[in-house]
Length: 539
Image 1 (tube, rainbow, N blue to C red):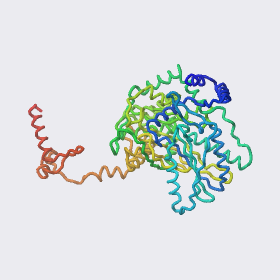
Image 2: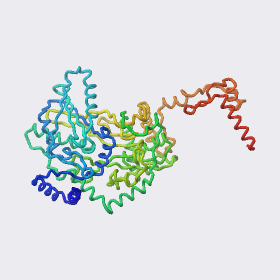
Image 3: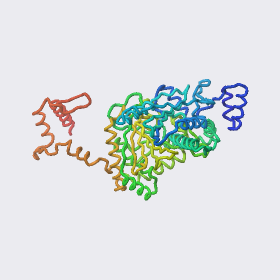
Image 4: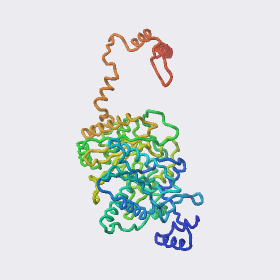
């Protein structure tokens, strides 16, 4: 079987399909293919943590108007027919993970009628139902790795929800799915042929092409660049957390969203245009500043996803194509924001020109010290994307996206930013519940907005001096938590005032370090002993 796999991998798509047909004519059930590098990583993660839902991709769309359920069902079935990846499961051949494409897969449509639920409670119940669907555990070996449910809210309103495992899909794929569904559904109702050309290749073709291309000189050039940028031990970002970091990540997460005003978006776009950078670069540079102000580190890595669809043939495919780039910034605290932005521009352009090396292969090549409490190479992610400006129109229906609450976190933090259809910036932070409280993330979103406003007002200021605290929080830190109105005698030094306090309150707690406490009496005694020692040494 191994020799046959090697033979298949070396064949052109046309010759491979011909060989498969010959095998099937002879009664062979062989239809296993090598995994892409990204698929292989998720397969191994699934073996390490079976039952995890961290890599489920949920999506939902609201359908207002008269819905034809039979046309919807047929449209879904046609999408599964068109895309082999949605009929794929995973097995091992001689201990090697392989993807198996089934000729047919039945995709049951779960219909949930919520019309009996009181209207005031219906949306809450809908969110609960979608969340439950999103937490569905997939079995990679048995499949199917896509589930679809239709929630009926009224005769004129439904919500279509689907969940796919990341090993067969990505964010771009969700858009492909919606576009194809729209065209197929419209064609059925209008009694015409759908305007969807047959796919020239399938995901298994990409996986085999990727393995062939990433050999020899192509691989060497990519690896050399990333090793130079990241070094042998990329820095680990140590943000202050609300709780100690657990020894092993559980992927429990939550999401906090915020809408920043349209005027801020306009100012950021104008600044980016004036400085010759993209909004992505400006917002990323601001993220670096916030991370620096939180951690004190000025050498850090941030991950960012890219569609990785740089070939025309794979643009219309559903599948796991997305790649992750590691962006390392190393700057000085006295740099102005504009100077940092120049550096970030160079970092981003260099990374994008070397984007073909799969993240999974990069981890293997760098081989950082493995730690189950941290993700390798980076611990926080930055995502920037544009959203469509209006809902999609179908015969008798209007479509609009439904926000789904995330209950998982792949990283310590993921900052996601998109231009909101109604203006402004839609900003969200997905965070690890084992590390952070919700109010901490709420403040972080406040800080990021204040920082962006400070940047557009004074981009030449040093990054260490840019404003980050809202006025109310600044007052709380400077005045609310300080007894600034206490009067001290100008004739006495600080050590004399301390000695008087120690004499007045000898048993009161003066210092706390973890679980250790020290009274004023003991602190004064130790201070005097140190002073005598220093004087003995001639100080």
